[in-house]
Amino acid sequence: MAALDEIIDEEMFEMEELRRVKIPCIVPKDRNDPFYYLSGEEFLERFRLPKDAVRDLIEEVRPRTHVDRLGTGCGIPLHLKMLVTLRYLATGSFLLTVADIMDIAKSSACRAVGEVVQLIAFLAPDYIKFPQPEARQMASKLYDIAGMPGVLGCIDCTHIPIQSLGGNNVEMYRCRKGFYSLNVQGICDSELKFMHVVASWPGSVHDSRIFSNCRICYLLDQEDYRGLYLLGDSGYPSREYLLTPLLAPRTEKHRRYNVAHIQTRNSIERAFGVLKRRFASLSIPLRTKLPNTKRIVMACAILHNIAISRRVDMLDVEIEPQEVVDLLEDEDDHELDATQVRESLIQRWF
Image (tube, rainbow, N blue to C red; front, side, top):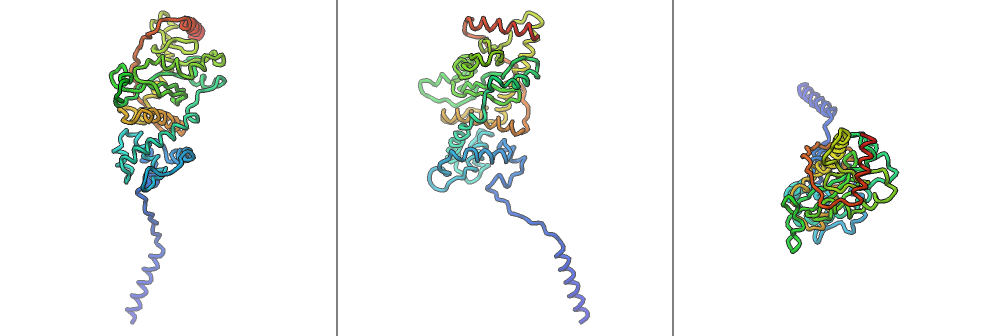
């Protein structure tokens, strides 16, 4: 009897000890929700934006979504459409997108991307803004790079490869490098954030023509922006508000101007490089319909600006040596006046 009491006491002691042990609470993960099962680093690596930024973006575009489903059958939640789109923009492959975001047909993923890039493109006025004439702080930040005075932003164009569109006008989209593309114009600030993007011109169109027909050219023609400049390469015509490098510097001041010009205008080269590295879909031929292709470019520029505003870390890129592009147009009165403005600036500041 005593032995039995000892056994009972020992078991009671063990049960009491077990009660004191804190067993960790294990919550099963939802393998269909990347917001839940991916860590912050894994999520950023796959979708290029942190979780809170993507959640905010979803809520921003939600008011424009009339029906939260695609086609017939089961609806696809908006947050899943957004993740499919971000993954496609980051990789350029629908197969990788479908592999990562499970249980979605490739055709549904294609439709989701078309819908979401349009929703994101609608946000362009909120995220891509050209500074007002009184925004002199922008010029001071660019001045700190290499001492170029009064610079509002840096301008350049980049070619976004696309698949052949077919038809009679297909050769309009073949750029001077031999592939089909959109010639996309961008203007950026010192933080590599885009202040203006034009993504509607075929690859064969010259950079100077795109600029001459854009809204910013008209704005800078106004008196409000007097004393403020854009920096462009030799592919642009020299204007009173557009400073280009000297192709044949003769004096030490001219050489110092060219060095400062190149170092400052390097911002737009880096901005395009970071944009394409962040969103690999822009570096391979886009196999989407032309309207969607243009929206994809705009959506990537908006997401790039959001990433910069959120201080998302980005790997820097190597910039290829600048290609000198001779202008096709003859000198006109505007260019003669601009040459005088540029020379006056060089003599005063360099």
